[in-house]
Length: 148
Ligand SMILES: *[C@@H]1O[C@H](CO)[C@@H](O)[C@H](O)[C@H]1NC(C)=O
Image (cartoon, rainbow, N blue to C red; front, side):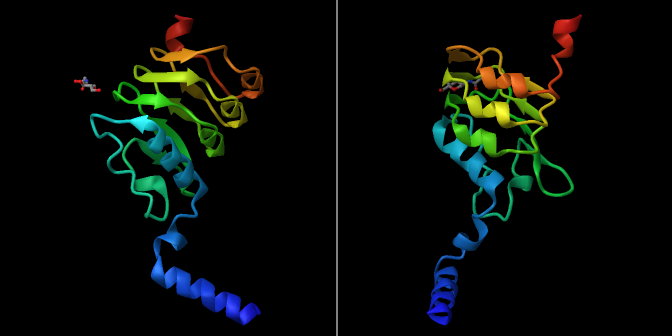
């Protein structure tokens, strides 16, 4: 049974090489985000999910361990909604989504991003309240502009 199974897996990987490369959870999360967004200016064009990780994608920055630490999509003319997948970016420090046409609710899963230093969501069309889960964001610093 076991040898048969592993042969099937190898066969699958040979047939569909992308299967072996699409297991990066942060890349998957970002790709899920892309699938929710309308992107008339093609700012997400480089987001190729067949790459081993998303670290070479434009508007994405990784640390030396290939974990995503920044998402810079401020003023990018994207529209759509955010989903729970953003909560998978466990190393994210900067989430910059300001000045777009994002709608719907702000996902409570953003409260899981314990390493967030800055989150800029202003100038969008979000509805509802700030999720209570944001109380868990202990590293978050308020934007410098608001302290002046
Ligand atoms: C933003 O996208 C819309 C289409 O949805 C387009 O008409 C408009 O020119 C774009 N704005 C900029 C600044 O590129």
